[in-house]
Amino acid sequence: KIHSAMTDVVIPIAPSSKNGRDEARSRKKKSDKKAPSSNGSGVHSDGGESRAQRLAVRRKRVANARARKKTGWGNMISVFLMACGIFAIYALTCMVFFRSLSGKSGSTVSRIRGLIKKDQIENPPVPSGIPIGIWPVSIRDEDGNFEEIKHPGYEDGHVTMAVPRFWADDPVAIHENKLMSRERALSIGTCVTVDPKTGTYTRGDACPVSERTIFVAIASYRDWQCRDTVTSIFSAAAHPDRIRVAVVDQIIAGEDGSCDAPHSPCSEDPSQPICKYKSQIDVYQMDAQLAVGPVFARHVGHRLYRGEYYAMQSDAHVTFTRGWDGDIIAQIEATGDEMAVLSTYLTDIEGSIDPNTGLSLRHTRPIMCNTEYEGGQQGKHLRHLAQPECMPLIKGMPQLQPYWAAGFSFSRGHFVATTPYDQYQPMIFQGEEMSITLRGFTIGYDFFAPEKSVCFHSYAKGANEAARNKVPHFWENSGRYEGTGIKAMKRLLGIVHMNPEVNPSEWNHSEVGGTWNCI
Image (cartoon, rainbow, N blue to C red; front, side, top):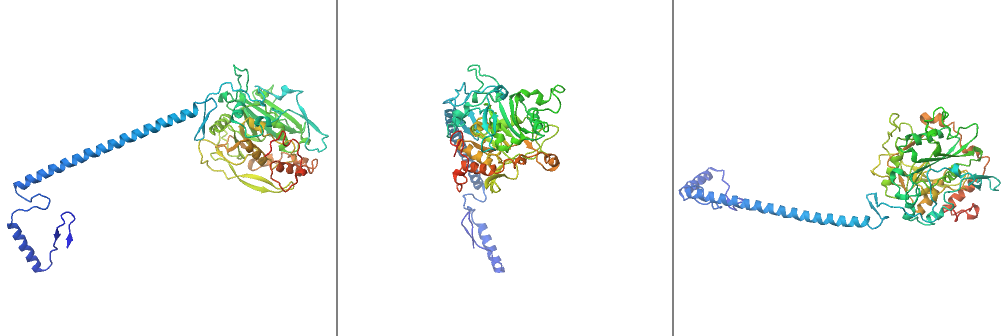
């Protein structure tokens, strides 16, 4: 037997035998003689009366369906109105919350998805310990105001050099030997236009982005490509009038060309960038025999900083993309971090820049997240490495990374003023990057990998291998300064507490705890 789900009537299964068929016919004849019966739903099978009843039932079903439809629309309208009410309350709450973040004071910052919102800052006072900057500026105007320092390659101090003074006589006075406050960080930076109310070029964040100055530091050792790098900086920039380049040029006079010497005399072709922007190029020339590596050269280079809003450090054999200055400024501003430092190991120049447009052909982003201990004659030190380039996963802004690289760095100008290179680290080529990273981090700096590259490096490989291998290196002076690198490495690691096995009495403590910030 099979039970019907609709009528719950037991339906007999017809037998397959002949007797079963006769019995079924007999039941059918008897049922035909009976009066019409109901099918269980109240609807009769025939007759006028049953047709009327079926019509009534149909009308009742239609009415019920319409009633259910009206009820469904009503429920949907109720849910819609409830959702609108919830959204309105949420929107009102957000408006009140974010208005409270940005409307309290001129220095309040709200960070939303990595972006920064700053109220207009008018005439910020310059805190104590921070010098007043001017623009335009040049160390040529400071003749007679240099200071004598001991050359780090001679321990007895019998060789001295005249070098520019630091912008701030005591870098520690800028950050006050602690995490630098946001107010102090925002107050530093010159503008190309003077503030009409205060008469100063040091306007900090009150300076419009379109008027902020850029300091570029380059250390070069007998590099024929240096002047091409300087040319590229100015010719590719969207706003070259806001850029000042400072070069520490270590050359042999009469044998090597100077970084500020154009390919043709300016009298013959005054349109050359080195001629056109000559007043914005400072070159500190040093006898190549006094060169003791990039650390000391960059120390001198940091002494040429004069309060510019941004600061960039680059190698002497780098080519820049068209509009690089606006591009890198947009990237650092996207971090919403006044203590951001954008830094990376640059990509090779081959196949990186379109020769027709001057724009980058690369869409990958170099980043530094690897590290290892590297040994050598000077001792074991920590060195960070670049990961293989890939497409950036974070879009619209740079990505945080743990390290800083000397070959390219872009930051607010106060970074080179608060974390200058060490004067007492001769013959060091590896290891100082970790020291700068740690010292900067203790003050409050955050290191980022740029989302996209604005310049590319000429490495000694491929098409550039032969030409780059002809460039001399500072270690040709190793015999003259033998042994100084080992002691310098002990100092480098000792300042950041990375060689606890070494007795502190074994390394030079000059200025540590005074001018230099320690961890």
